[in-house]
Image 1 (cartoon, rainbow, N blue to C red):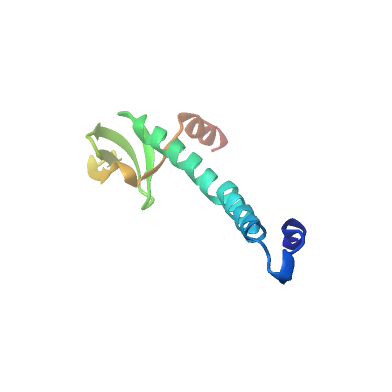
Image 2 (cartoon, one colour; image 1 turned 90 degrees about the horizontal axis):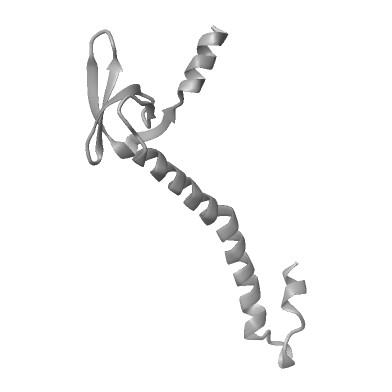
Length: 112
């Protein structure tokens, strides 16, 4: 496939500089579209989610702990993980993977 993009070699059988650069640029463009661009979009979405955290949100941490946000500091979050014993833990804001939407909770209650 690359031989179609490269064209014919220059005099003496040596490929020109342009013929060597074009395939490299194509590979870089494909990597950008398939890896870097989606990763940036996901990072922006995650940053917005972490900035929008508020007291009372139910969250899932990277270690699988589910809790309710009790207090927010700069980069720390206090989670209440057990209602009966009033157990609370402090975690880093970056350890939160997702916020559990209330719609999902209501749908699960209807199914049960």
